[in-house]
Image (cartoon, rainbow, N blue to C red; front, side, top):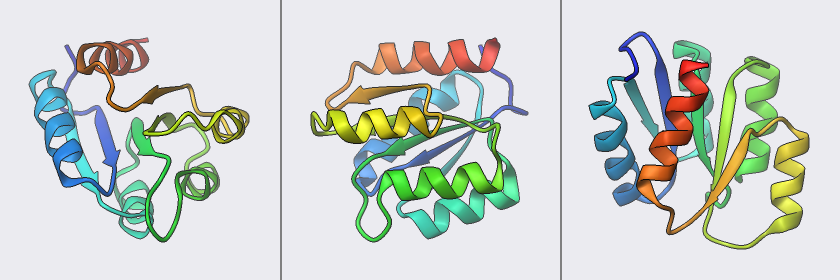
Length: 123
């Protein structure tokens, strides 16, 4: 179980996914922040310094890789897990080069995602 001083930021333009992840990770005991876009996400990274970011690859305006690059500039040690609805292996490789820990393809197994978050924040 996590603790409330561990912060998780969920970045996804799909409201339903943000709500689902918020519910699941809140039950794990983390402080949860949500962002529907890159601008909001980067402001939360600056203000709250989350321990882990769940970042969707495809977001209108600023895509996941661009957001990830900005996160690396603001908080280089923030852990990032990518989420994608597509099998974009080239983008996933680039995200890995930029320091993303792993990725999940939607629709993902919520228990696997929860487990991955717990592993990253407990270690």
